[in-house]
Amino acid sequence: MSISATHSHSIERSSVFFHVERYSRARVAAHVLMMLALLAPFRVQGQCQPAQSKPSASDAAHSGTPQFYDEPQFTVAGVADATNLGGHGSDTVVRTKETLAKDTVSLSKLTAPEPSATSHGAEEKSLRETVVRAPQSFDANRRLGKLLAENGKSADALVYLQRASQLNLGGNDNAELHHLLAQVQENLKHPLEAVREYQRAAELNPSEPYLFDWGTELLSHRAPEAAAEVFAKGNRLFPHSVRMLVGLGVAWHARGSYDRATECLCAASDLNPNDPTPYIFLGKMQNVSTAQSPDVVDRLARFARIHPEIALANYYYATSLWKRYKHTADPDTTAQVQALLEKAAHLDPKLGSAHLQQGIVYSETGDLPHAIPAFEQAIEASPELEEPHYRLAQIYRRTGEMGKAQRELQLYQRLSAKATEQAEQDRQSIQQFVIALRDRKPESSETEKQ
Image 1 (cartoon, rainbow, N blue to C red):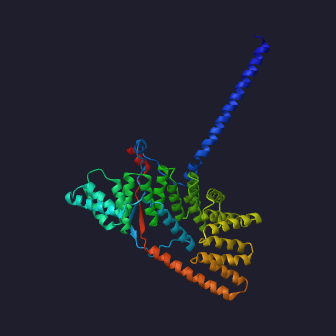
Image 2: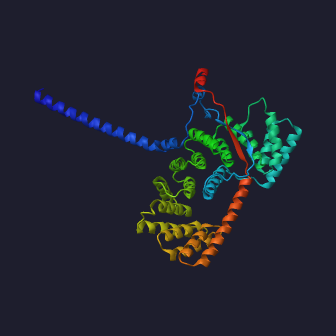
């Protein structure tokens, strides 16, 4: 082969190598981008997670059922009577935290279709006869207690479930039994016993439902730090659980860490963009913020895009848009906000907050003649709302109509006092957990033991 031919072949081969290398680099880059996109929700989840201790060597070696990793860093030492547990911050902030906690608890109340009353009665009679014949039967007592609990007969159920628990001593501890006992104790207003049973169930079987129920029990009794620890562990074990991230976000919110709460809720909405739950919690959290982050606006825009038929999707997106851009809003943005609010009110005529927000937009853009009827529509749609009366009083004061201003202010004060009284009654009915930190051994001594 001639020198020129050899040179030509070398150039051709180099060119092929160059194209192959460039193609390979492109594939690698595409793969990296794809992995980053897939891992993005988990990166955000990591940001909303609290500092965590590493799992022990024995936990890491264990396979099968996911483990709780380490013992919780807290213990429920007791309960305190609710005398003045309104929390810190404005009344709006406190009420929002309480509402979010209640809504999170409702996510765990997954009801199954119930059999007919006739079949319930026949089955109960049969099980009672079985227990009379075999009072020391663990299975018969457990089944009867479970049936009574499902029928709302908590006091009767407790007798048989506790007997089953005693009969099971020395045998394999039963997570389902502890979970049933927890539900019954909570129904009987025994929160301390309930939370300990929820904890035992979750430690025996750290499943997603058991961990979530333990976390919500802590959250509902004003123990957000402990609840955050449980939800965080649940999120690490079940990273695809939307409600676990929602619970973690609400726990952060209850602790006053609003940025972390937002990160958790945004991550939850990214896990399953079609699920309305995280968006609704994000929307409710807007009550405590005067400004709105672009991440929240983006997620609520997606909510309205995916579910245009849901009134709250349009309302929350409109509210977030206005909070984000009202100081720089152009006529097009203002028109978009009002159109979204109009759609929300049309989809749900009882959504007085949509009319209220319409009035706020009109008022803040100086259009008082349109603000007044918007506030009046809010009152008509939702008579329990306080804020429309307050804002109407401000407008009438500015326009010199002092009689109307005084009347609206009195209505606002009356409704506000009524809402405060109701909120206080609700707080009095809930006992607060007293949380104590457990003594933790130094890492060095733990390492030496392993």
